[in-house]
Image 1 (cartoon, rainbow, N blue to C red):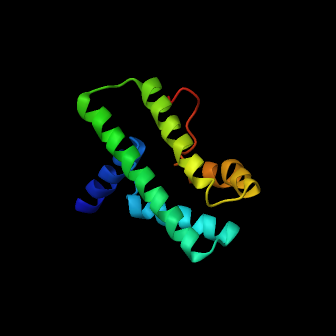
Image 2 (image 1 turned 30 degrees about the vertical axis):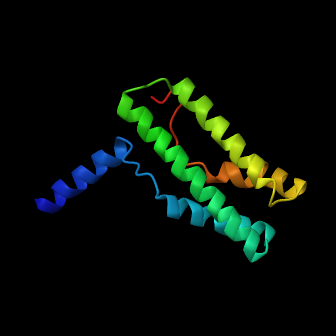
Length: 125
């Protein structure tokens, strides 16, 4: 009976989007691995890139928490602020990557870093 109840709870949680955000460290490691395998930057550059992404992820998490705590549900404003933060991050990232590497980052690597929400129909229904 307990096992059935556990599966029911797990299934319900996942069906309702039981998504848990990865930690800053997990996200930085993921970026580190992808950039390292794609571009093989020298260790000093890689450390700077890790620091850049750590700061970026902490800032976005803090902003997200602030918005949620204030009860602000303006998704457009949040999206605009997050886009602005990503653009600032990318400007700093240009110090460490060549123009061609930035193009690869924007077209291939960055899109692969976004959380996948599964096969939901348009409109989130």
